[in-house]
Figure (tube, rainbow, N blue to C red):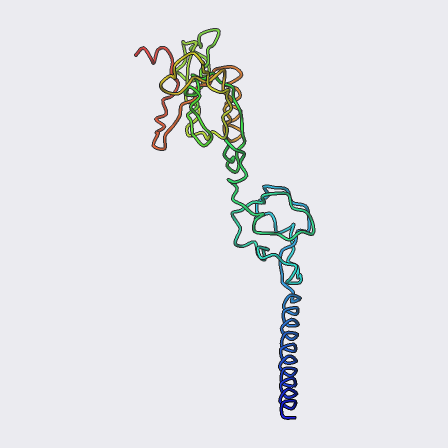
Length: 256
């Protein structure tokens, strides 16, 4: 009798403990569910955005929207203020949440072997022989001096409305620009021979080299003119390279 009584009390105690644990679990689950349903404000794309769009221009294409917490990724963007120097990494479509991973440094968008074009500038390419581009030893990110030479059919007359430096001469060279950014260099692989021993120093590039420069439109026009009607020569500049403004060089100046 006593044993049955103790067994009954134990069973009753276990039932009470189980009920309490079940109640607490249910309460916690309800709490978690409520937290998941609490709205969170995040930026949602309203209009299609192309890759490379600066964050400064995103405000008109996104809208702060309340969404259930369970539907919001951890890296969802709630404000553009912390990403003012970023651009979009990919195209964005209406309805998607703006994520931190979609906003990157502008330099990360540049294709391999290129550098971004500075704001307000454009790119212009010239096709040059290797000796005119430091033997092809140029790379994106370098800066160069741009020299342009012209050879006229006749000597410049003394009454021509041009610089006195070139009057009486057919040929002249001038430094057109200083510290010009190279954004891309395209060239054939260096020449190699199976039978020859490895040469010391850089191998010779094969054929001409395409060099793309970043410059404002007025300067680009002068570079194009030089490529069409003269000859262009590039010098590779160091950070400390100076612009001494050599002026126009003619045979008379060289022979002095």
